Image (cartoon, rainbow, N blue to C red; front, side):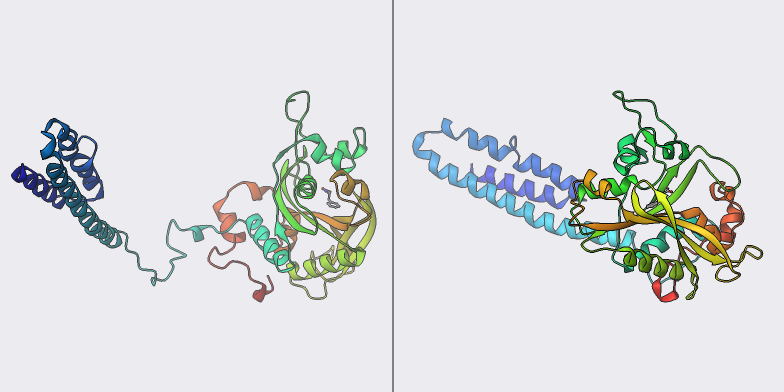
Length: 359
Ligand code: PHE
């Protein structure tokens, strides 16, 4: 018996030593220490021995099992290290190599799409003003897209939006969101004020010509806090527009307007020259975005007490501000994936926007 047990230990030990990797070693553990291993089986047979012989044999087998376990543990530590060494060698990469932006097949063959770059810039600029990014679904309920925003069933704004309707589910007709404003509702329902979010995202309207696409992008802004007033809205948007277009004295005009979900509502124009297309001078005005103080009914629809909280919201077209900033004359190539267009108007993927550069 003593010899048999010693052999058992020696066998397990040399088996472990022969394992080439952790997977093999694990299989050997099952064989030599698992439920059906020889030691376990011998232990199971102890009760067949005369009772005075049992304690000595039991001790023998326990010691053997402990020894096998010990060999296993030690071997496992060594094999794990070897495995890691092998991976470190195989997966080595030289992080000190310079990037190769113009090598064929790398991103710089084209560039970051202007829409994506504008979204990065929006996130950077508004991020510096304390805004977080919020998102919502492209397929919206009628209530989020219209009702909660104080646009009742037969309101003309619904027709203005040229809505794409989706086949009804449970008697309700979802829509492809016609603006990013439903994410105002989702944010106010999910978060307690104070709130400061921007919402860059896709929007849809049944509209198609040189300056309209059925799918386009907007960015929404929402600020809810105590004692927020029109001055905050104006300051925030003037700062944003001047930083985004990189023109420190860009003329900005606020013009009374109407949206069902803001009161008062304002359209925002920037100064430009109609003749040359140049921004910042020329005496003409160009409409750039819609804004206003969040309507008390909208706050109440989201369970926010309008006597305690106020806020402002704004929304603008991302294609539009991108075309103006970069002098891009036509909307259609934005969605045509033409590598020559991307090479021309795309941004360098290796230089993300930074406030130091004035964005
Ligand atoms: N949702 C409006 C639109 O699509 C823009 C807007 C957003 C206006 C927020 C006011 C406040 O035209």
